[in-house]
Length: 167
Image (cartoon, rainbow, N blue to C red; front, side, top):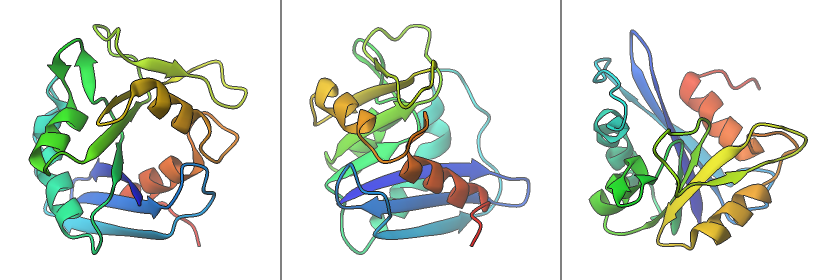
């Protein structure tokens, strides 16, 4: 099982979301859910994103009925050579599960990320990984369902976290 995760911070709550799927090319989720937390996320600090998100992602993963084989995070596993990002810290916190990071924006110091163009987009997503070869991770993200820059299931988990999924 592959699980994609995302977190959204609101003034009245923080919401962590997950979407499960069996294979990279799946068009539909096999499961989804959210976990609500009180507001109060730490301020964003460049290069320290894990300090903001980790405290929501770990209990979300621990609450899943089946542990995932692969986790996809909205962000980086590596910010640069031997410079750990959110995905690395999550990998360490949950006992070594493979983590693939898919970031929407380049991180200025990162030469380790693989830029992946999807659909007809001229703007790439940036893929990093731990527990999986980064070239294989980039290929997997490139072949995820959806014709746009952001794969369908990654867009879904973002919408769940923002509570903007329409029925």
